[in-house]
Length: 566
Image (cartoon, rainbow, N blue to C red; front, side, top):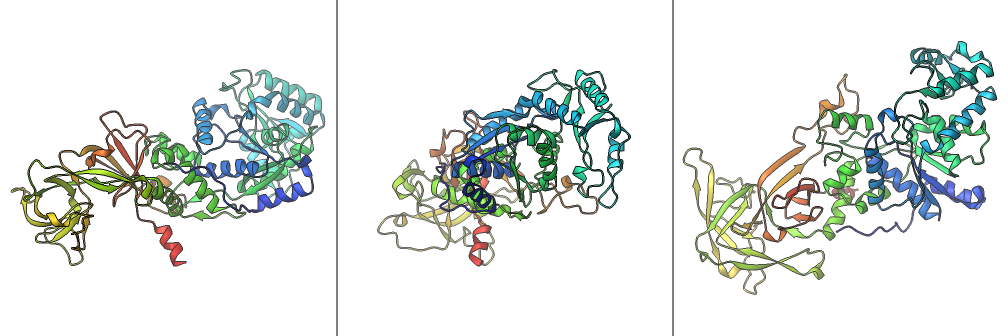
């Protein structure tokens, strides 16, 4: 069950402070208008979820608007599949753009017209240098750049060449359009940056109508201004690009000039957040796809079993900062545990079965025992669990020669079966060749049934179980962190980030047994498997007669313990 979308009681951060001051000063006619501008060149990840929550949340809290705009200016890497997945992710998180869906490609004519204006004003020129030469001429942080030989071209020649670029008369890489700013600027982004390049690729929306495409640093501020955006909120790596953002808008004839504000991007332990690296994981088949439950993509987290409420809660808890930092993934796991603890029905599931026979229990008898649907929600009532002579318990819950602090089942030892009776192990049956324990034979005390007034005996161990005849079979997938290092992107003596892939990140168990009440559970249904964690019926591979469960998260909550110590 997913929690309803509720905003926190108080919401304060430096971006909201800026907006509050702007509203007080009646800037932008008292409007607040933000946008979420993803590139459709891959699936969104949890870092994008933070940006979605921030941009749409800021608009909601200030009675403003938020646009969804696709930055589709690089057709060689963009696909309709990515556009559709991004729309689904934004809606799934609980936000809607209403009629404000835009594409940078909507503005290709305007962008071209403004580029012509810059050329006419002597503020842009066509440059014939190769990409390598442009990089060399640009200089470094300690060495000033030098001007391109093409910088002194006449306005007329630049206009003709730019028109040829648009007409497709020049090959890819022949030349680019550059802004004429300052090759000695301490900010490398201001050293005559490229505004347009030739790229003869078919675009997913405009087809082959264009063979020149604007660069992000040029298209983005103009797109913001054309849409009347008031606050252009972006991540910290664009801070050095802000002077170029302002230069573009200051040098064209356009009504609005949005304010760019940068915030720290989300970095998560045991995770990579680079879209390029995520694509590499997919293309080199380290994972099964963009929606692999080990991926930090929103589609992967959704398939893993995370809820929109848990992701929104997580984004709210980490807040909005000005400096980059790394968030412990345990905090994200804590958010989903808190939600599912209240909402997930309880189920007994045996993942590695060991057969247990109660020798003194009547053959053929099946009792229907009462068990809580969710002890955190007493109003939900009880569920019925069948109990019989032949059961299955976890193989790890039995040891022939247990250590001192092993409180589960062993020869001659008593334990309680959850919601049922106290049993005592009498003997075991082994495979004569391997010595493996095949069966455990026990006796039970009929006066110790849970919930009866006569049930006064106490034992140290309680085991979960399923009735053999009524249990349903399922496949269960246990997920761990995809990487073995907290920071797999850290450069360690030339190691590649895939060197730290966790070989135990996925364990598939095929002979798991669950209580029969789970039969027919719909894809997307979530449960707590007692002692194992929270699980979801896989939404991709579960079929009628073949149920697959993904573990969302274990019951172990390291983040809660850290908070208690603090």
